Length: 487
Image 1 (cartoon, one colour):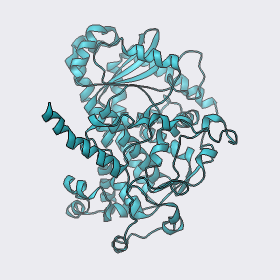
Image 2 (tube, rainbow, N blue to C red):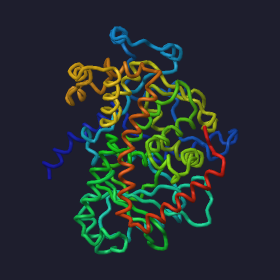
Image 3 (cartoon, rainbow, N blue to C red):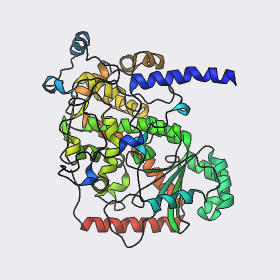
Image 4 (cartoon, one colour):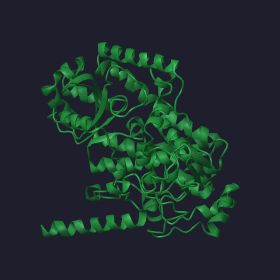
């Protein structure tokens, strides 16, 4: 016992040091309550009250070790590599104090089992108490072990559409052992499966892990009087997508507010990295100045950029705008604490006194800062972006490897700092938005398409046609109505 305690102490010390150095913690649940101190003088509805945000340029004092601005040597080396600073580099420099380093959420460096309880509190959303209880009771109907579970979609959060029928509730179950889980679930709920269930858990597991995005969906399942669709994913697959954006299939779903029903520290850590990555990609797609609502619209739209359903008649063309406009308080709760951790992003006016469409944010367009942001993109996504620019600029392979080749040990010692290649990408103001969008589309398109085809087999043809029919009906209804909530 004594040996175990002594062995755990270095890990605890490492985590504590990481918290102090990188600012890993977001506010505890109590700190996420909407600020009501100025409610009497607020000019917008109560639902827009912002979670408590520290505006570095106005009211906060440094709470973490200061990050020094780039030295003159780094500036000179930047200019020597033909990277020209933009006019905004100096115009708004006084707004960016860089009092804290960007957080690094890497499960390979931190022991997720010792995460503080308040870590990732921004991921928890409030929903109707009756619905929350119903969803929790629903999980108890599954005897197969579910490590992580969340509910999402219009059945949980309003998307501004009205329907006489209750929408189907969408769920994702994270499991440790795919075949074992399906074996237990087939014994208990054979009726949830299509004809593939007759072939046994081995076939079901191979179909899940071997095709598409690694998710197996059972649709139109009635549990406790509630119509649900649930997807099963291996936790390893899930965490890889959250951390590296291999497919963006589930990571993209987690960019929007979801209701966590059963939590797992490893997923919470990976998802915090995922949310921060979504914020960074959105900054690369947005101009120097933008509204808070534009930020959330850009983030919510990432997962739909390459989704083939958006180009067909099976998805509401106003879906992104509807999601954002009807869930603004949840988007604020999810991303506002993370905005406060980025040294290159500030609120230009008071977010507590303005609705999201009137709240303006300002990002630092300095190529060194943006180059660091490029370097900190998810691993798989970053490689695709690098390859895109290698082809565009016709860089020979050996030279390319020298430009981007950094060992993991070197990254751990020096941090993920952007070099000459990343700064050149960041300086490509005319094309970077187009290139990032192309990488997003390339990441999402095939997994989403193959996952849709897989649905014919996992769901069965009858249920698939029923599902498509309802989607087409929603599409026709949406086409007749004007787009709402566009930023």
